[in-house]
Structures are given as structure tokens and as C-alpha cells.
Image (cartoon, rainbow, N blue to C red; front, side, top):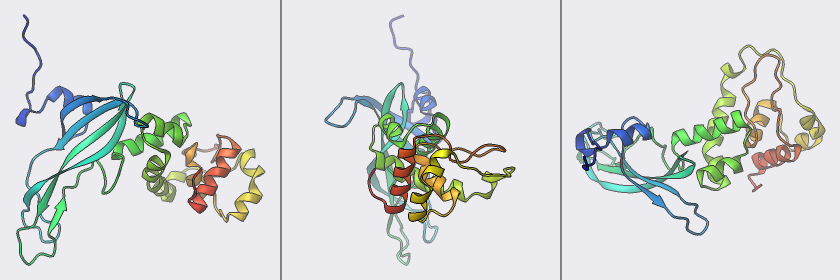
Length: 240
């Protein structure tokens, strides 16, 4: 037969197959287009998405909020089919109907992305996994995401700091050591006042983030030049 066999079985006209490919609970894909290369912006996919409809309470008083339009929020997600993915989130806006409430307007919250984030939450963790598993640099991950270095680093830095502060991360580890690259630049680290290896590991996450296991060295891998540059950026905030 010549008729199309595609199906959109979800309520609201959402396509179940496309939502399965996107694999984000509570988020539905409305449109998929191919974005041509423009200047420094690489070619890739652009997805228009929105969350499940439903009632939302005011953050201040809990009264059911009233819909107050939407705003288009641009994010970057994990690559798909070898191409960078840009998300355009139709984020809902609300206003409180309670006159005595100090909260006036606010945007919906979702695990898709945090406030003012440029990467989705899963893209930030994906970047960390690439650095940890494949020893990729932040610059290499940024190229795959279609963003610049600072966008990736700003997204993963608080997550790395959270991992470093987790005491369970060192469970079962008796000894921490350093490789010859770190020893070679010991004087530089002292001048930069990097006092402990955990914090150095956060700075060094540009090239490697390793979960230590018994008998393994913390901070191994990567070139000595990259490590020095990582520490310099961590301490001063200057560009690489």
C-alpha cells in the first residue's frame, strides 16, 4: 500500500517513536529539522520540545498558578547520529493568582535543564563520562556538542566539585599517589596554593576524571602541559 504507516499515538498528537528516540521522560518532541552550518555554528539537528501539560503550584504560596505564555529557551543536548543537537524548549511561564503572594511570574522547572543552564543535565553528565571513560579533553567534548570550551566547563565544574566532595568516592581506597607529571610540576602547584589532590583532580578534569579504586593512582593520564593549564585556569579563571 502507498499510504504512510507512521503513527502518533500519544495524547496531544505527540509521536511515541520520536519520544522514544529522545528518551527523556516527560518531554515530547514537536519538530525535528536539520540545521545547516552558519559561520562558526556547525550543522546539526534542531529539536523543538515541550514538557507534559499539567497544573503547577506557585513557588511562594502553593496556589495553582495561571499559564502566562511560553518562552523559547535554547539548549544543547548530547549528539545524535553523529551530529550536534540543539534543543529549543517551549518553556511555560506562570503567574500567581494570589494578590498577597510576593511571587509574580516564574518559569516551569524540569530535570531537562537547570536555571540559566546552556547544556541539558544529561549533556553535562555525558561530557563528564567522555572525560572519565575516553580521557577526552573538554575542547574535544565541546566540538562534539557544537559549543565552545567555556560552555562545557561552566556546566561540568559544579558537578565535578560535587563528586570531589562526596566522601563515598574514596571508599575502599587506602593510598593516593601521583604520577610523574604532577611531581615534575610540584613547585608550580605550591605557588598556586593547590593544597590537596581532590581539588587538583577537579581542576585537572579538563583531560581526565577518574574514580579511584584500590591500588590506582589519582590524577593519572594526560600531558603535563594540559595539567598545568588546568590548574592555572582553576586558580585564576583565565582562558586556556
